[in-house]
Image (cartoon, rainbow, N blue to C red):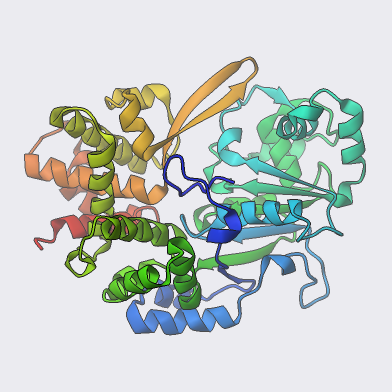
Length: 439
């Protein structure tokens, strides 16, 4: 399996890189959550260690709750980069390897919400077609699909990235619904009825989402069981470093370096940040660099990663490199303001990002099938990179003193309206202040 966080061409076994995540099946109070977000260093370690003691595991997602009820719908919520998608794929992998849910589910299906966005509202489909697309071998073999759907209570659907769905489930969905898995309906109707258990009501669901979409999701579900993913504990962070390097001395040196900066080690609670830091540290070691002379802030690490990719992958002139970076920055900033993470090809080209090399470094290219055509879309390799480039956009705009008719592009306007970004741009502000730090 290809690690979605791996560099191009690098394949690793999922179990070699996967470390367990803290997962709680109870709700935190507002105060507890605020303390956790604000804490760094020793205080953060104490809070996370306390949470880790109450952590559950993927094996127990469908265990009876304290009232003896077994949930049919499980919601895995957590921040961007916290490991929701990797956990979903780990569940798929373990089931396929006969290590998980073997007696509970005969079939497990993975539905990617980002792909569902690209099906037009008017496009007709059916749950049977969605299933058959995952298994091209059985496409068109209705008797096989019919046999699969016959035992609903043995089916598990993993719906990844609910927060990325662009369309809403309005009141029409509650009135106009289908109960026939063979009936063709708009995709939003199918998903709405799958969520609300009107379609395949005896099947089971695992849904991943960022907290920002919980309220919308809650309106669609009846009696879900919520789990909160908090990322790596201190132990798992260290385990991840040792798994990544595969060399005890290198891992120990990298950990020693990271632990010098409380904020950096705190951010390692996010699996994606751990991966980025490990990647940068490994590159520095392979070049014979002294880690003690390497910048150790989150912004510096991302900048080092950016410079490394540009240096070793860009074969064009300095002017072309600058154009590509500026294009990435303006695309990222526009996406932040529009709360958009998926970009159509024409949107990318509008920012002068039509060169193949610039796209492959920091944007994922997605090809989705729509009837006989293919839809090409792009997204940043992770939301944190979009926030990084958005922050860089505002810094470049300030320093170059470029004036725009759109005042939303000015740094001062962004700061004045920061209240709108408390949840959507929290890491972005960390990058922003990092860029503005003279050191």
